[in-house]
Length: 180
Image: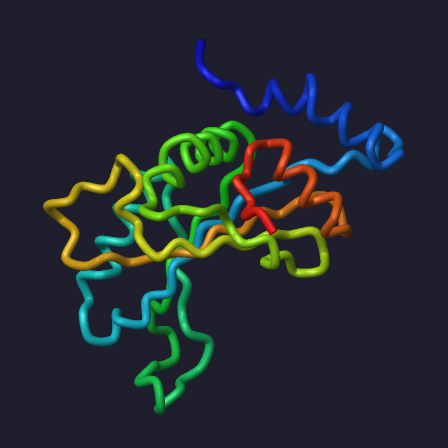
């Protein structure tokens, strides 16, 4: 039987969080969305990077990515107003849980010398951002198309404002935090 993180949350994790933090039913922290983002600074010199990244994110998430554009020109970075500088995908519901399961069960264990994700990447409002330096840990990435390893940021947006509650939520979902 396949591991179902959404079912696990509803049946077990929500009740544990409720009793541990003494919360009402409406205040139980939950994962609202996962945002995957990659900055494309090299798109200034290599226009193929934009297409490659969009295709890769679509295969990783099953959802079409949104291209982000510069709001103003910055000459020091050789960026012009309206130029594509990033790519992001926002996952919710089933796709979010599918991606999280893939991240926790397949991708993170493939990282060499992996000792856990850092504990100090919470933003003070209950959201957690994880930076991956290598995208080839995902099974959807075709090695023949990879010219160099590129990373991206994964932001977990929760319904709570407390970093402690968000930490407990992600920990119970299986996020492998580093031991102190």
